[in-house]
Image 1 (tube, helix red, strand yellow):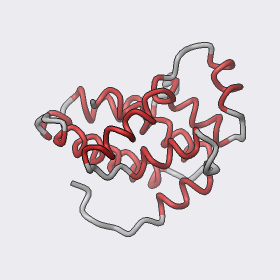
Image 2 (tube, rainbow, N blue to C red; image 1 turned 120 degrees about the vertical axis):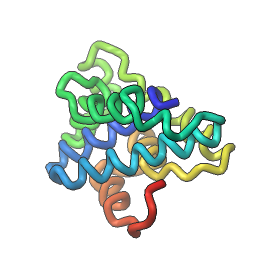
Image 3 (tube, rainbow, N blue to C red; image 1 turned 135 degrees about the vertical axis):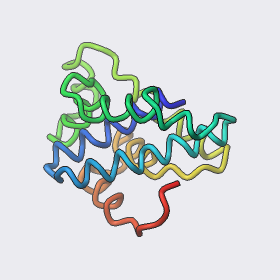
Image 4 (cartoon, one colour; image 1 turned 90 degrees about the vertical axis):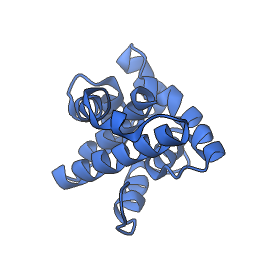
Length: 147
């Protein structure tokens, strides 16, 4: 679960970085992304503390911030206004988050788990929201406990 969710979060942080929203926005997305990862994992029977180690938080931070992350590159290019089919051709490699985001969204909905970052990424990938509008909506969400 963590491996799939972190790729979707990397797309979101790539969008934020591409829109030059700053390090605070990046940190907020990573923090809230970890909460999404933990909530879905717990709903599917995983122990939440599993996500606090290298395979959860560590992998999330690397994938969401690393220059070699294909999923982050997708987000950067979406923010630059490129169309998803063009991005996928340009990458030349699979960006797993593009394909797993809708599946994660469906799984979360069936499990009753709120995953607003995943929902926003799916909306952008499907062309229902612009990258800027999606991030504006995420960044203006009311503050609440992240766990």
